[in-house]
Image 1 (spheres, rainbow, N blue to C red):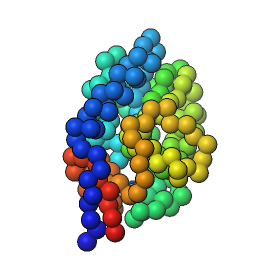
Image 2: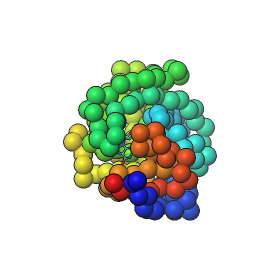
Image 3: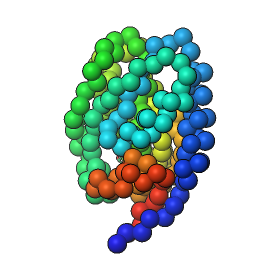
Image 4: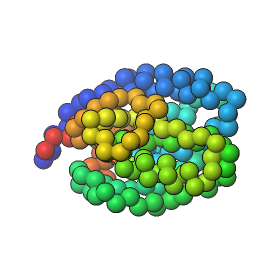
Length: 170
Ligand code: IMP
Ligand code: MG
């Protein structure tokens, strides 16, 4: 049985998201913000983050999938496209983890085709050391390594419902 090691508590997550929400609120004043969550992993983070942003915004979702077990397959499959009109608007992509960067890079490329005014990235967890693409994460809550689960993040679809962030040790 893999072991769950507590890394970040519910309270620490809450504090960091509050701080990040305030920054986004400041930065997007006067812009036309559309927050787009990357499914599935970002669903918990997205729900908490948008409630800390106090300017007008709209929410959409994109489905991107790449992982099996604990390693990226390298193949990104889009399972859902956004429904809103995004032309000329300011997209903030909300991702659970940016690891190699392949998923978010492909997602940005796919969003660019819709001609938004801007695209920025907000990640709950940034695994900076493992990056294989040239992508800049504009807002990151925590920089971690290891295999992480909880708070939306899964291992083969399990553990998403844990309220805090854990490392899964095999
Ligand atoms: P990338 O394409 O290598 O950047 O991988 C990003 C995607 O892989 C994220 O959206 C996550 O869903 C998943 N992922 C990467 N690292 C982890 C992890 O430690 N735990 C759970 N999922 C992960
Ligand atoms: Mg994901």
